Length: 332
Image (cartoon, rainbow, N blue to C red; front, side, top):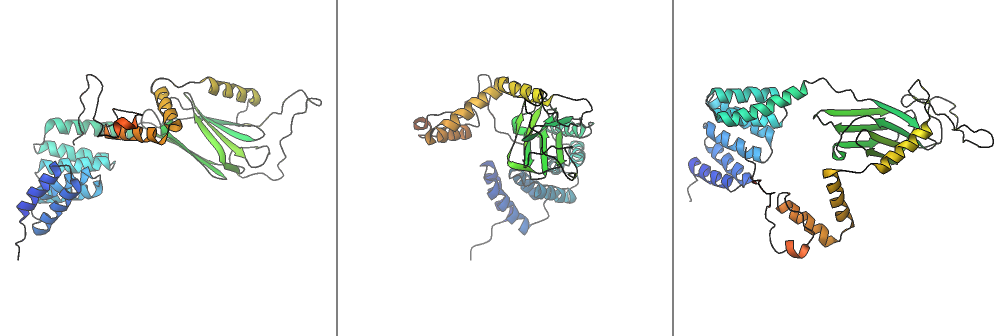
């Protein structure tokens, strides 16, 4: 019968797999070693590191804590716990772990960097929430909500429509989260509703189910709501006036016209313009162009974007960072 492998041999194999970036294999081998000998804190520290590479942070934190229980003076155990807590957004606990790692002789430079990142997260979470104002107006066919938030990235904004609700979520430029939830007075048509992200605001347009005048944006719908009257030039030269949450009367037809003009004139700049160009090429390109763009972007770490499938299909696309920039893999 073949003799069982020793924990030290399993650890050697696991370390080799880790160096080869086969983190799943490394974690499995560390587990086998622990099953034979669960008294070594370094075994748990090593597995915690492999689990972090696999983004299994809850399990990694448990391993780091087990290592601390076995050896309360191991700086690497506190470091692994701190990193796991950081990714779990448990910033106060992460800060305590990094400080403990430093106290027990951990790598000062690395720990200082993690402490800086953690303190930034804590400071950001304690900031006074930014007040974002919103207003609304309506036409015969749509209800429009304007959220006055500047410099939002389109990728950071999501809007979900339901027949009687609207929910907008966004990541603000300072890193804080914004959320707007509306319980609408009247039903809308979700599939015919949309939103547009501009430099100074987000415009949300919701299609009405019925051409009725909304007396309020939110709340319970009143009984006997009348249809919005259509302006008839022979009878009246004045356009219909629609209700708003503002006490001051506004010419919403004029405002809507100005908004449409602003949307038409607003052009993306810088990186946004470049992204729009890439999206246009990808959307209008052939299957080979799309494959070439996907393959070159993924294999080059985002440094190459090619549309030539004949070229990129022959071999793996290498990393080509900009001049003066050195490309390095992230290693915690």
